[in-house]
Image 1 (tube, one colour):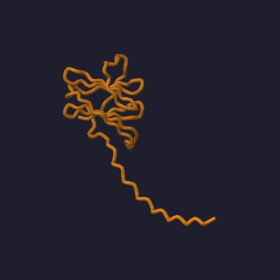
Image 2: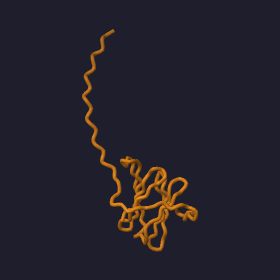
Image 3: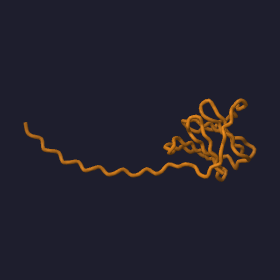
Image 4: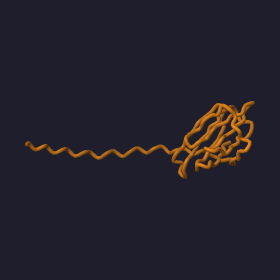
Length: 125
């Protein structure tokens, strides 16, 4: 199952669990010009992850096994949190099921340069 949420920074977050790996993808722009992906070994989720609004991005909470995992999602990157954050007065952001995660298209090769014309000889002084 893949979940998608919108962050206040204009980014989208995509969250999936594949063989016990929680994969978090941040995507920027309509054409997904910037895509950043990180993977964390968490185990299989017990329930749907929860996304919370944070001052500088969002906090993702995933429950797997007997543990809770917290991830800080910022425009600059994805980081694990070693201490549970204070989320009591924090708004939840909705997550929706989606079928696929955006990927970047491979870059097209550059066209070859035109040959440089030979230099003219220097006239003697």
